[in-house]
Amino acid sequence: MNALFVAALALLPAAEAAENQIDLSFGSQTTNDDGWEVVGDGYAHQDIGGRVGVALGEHLSILGSYRYGAGGNTVYNDEWEEDTNAPGDEFLAASYLHALTVGPKLSGRVNRFFSAYGTAQLSGHLATIRVDADPILDDDATQLQERGLAPGILGAAGLEANLPFNQRSWTPAAYLEMGYGHTLAMKFDTFGEMNFSGFYASWGVGVRF
Image 1 (cartoon, rainbow, N blue to C red):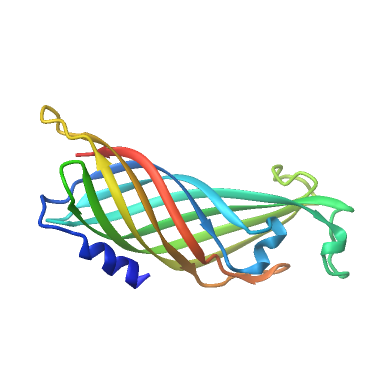
Image 2: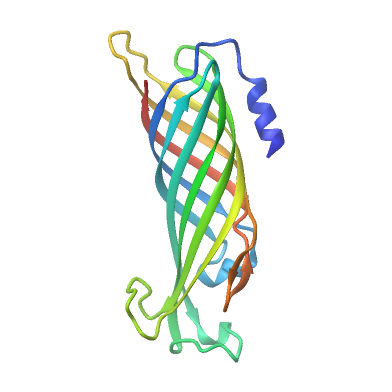
């Protein structure tokens, strides 16, 4: 993570001040914890969310985001341990993840249309796992539902593209960033302890002003 952050900073040329920003974001984060296989092989959360940046000075801004993702998988009883009370011979397991992040962003113009940046952020994650014939329903008496909460960190480097208009105080923009996210263990009564750590990517569109 630190290597990504340093590499991004090395790309920063002398440039104009950082800008405020509002983005609609889409993304994906994989996990290397095998415990998540109950809700999908090669597990990754596809998420949607938003982020806001407030300029603090030249090159520097504070960036905060919210992301929501969900995933699921069909599970059979023979995949569970014998002492697990699974709801039927075949059922669905689904997970829902809320994530909040906040941290500094250092950026600089590459040219008129592109800027490079690096960010290191603190994060908080709330995960819900539901096991049932229909995990979308939250009022089923036979549903197994558990939640886990954990803090984490995230480091990423990215590239932004924008179309500056001299006649306007704002410009449309798009971005792509990649990095690595890590959380401490989330504790679930039935599923044990699992972290959500792995490769992270995010892209989106928004405005700079």
